[in-house]
Image (cartoon, rainbow, N blue to C red; front, side, top):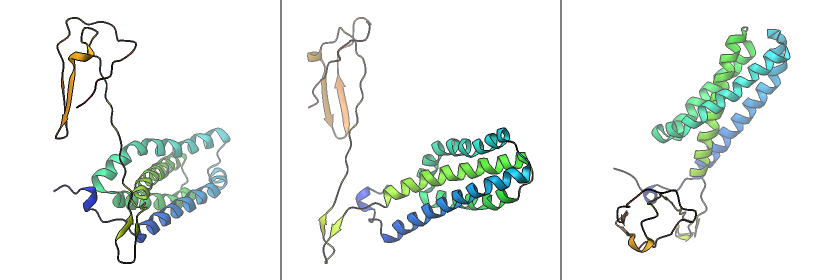
Length: 199
């Protein structure tokens, strides 16, 4: 059974605190890696070019993981994605300090970047979900409750032969019905599109 937004309990203080703690862990972990960069360069005997390519692995991993994180979070939930990516993130930190191979370091940095991207996206989703601007009185009744709305627009070309007066649109039960005559011939796109009124 699908759950509507009004059936979901408002997020509490615990969700806000855990989101902030996760952001703190992410920041401390990234700053820890920044301190390890000179150590890794000296340990592996890297020149600036190879080090630059290795550091690029963090960004590549992050960029490649971000588009899929929203889908994964929608399917499994933000909490599971944050926990798994946080585990990968924390598991990579000691490896970054101890790996002796350039290729293994590249793999660890890729996974480190991917976990950063996943945590960043899922924490942003979690932070948006846990943000609440509702105000209640002492009895728990709402004094102010914000709701959000949006708009959707879609346009398509029907031809020059179809006149605005011949197009009829009706929105009923969540379905937009558009009635228009079939165009006689195809022409180039119009410079100024015509707008129709929806009943």
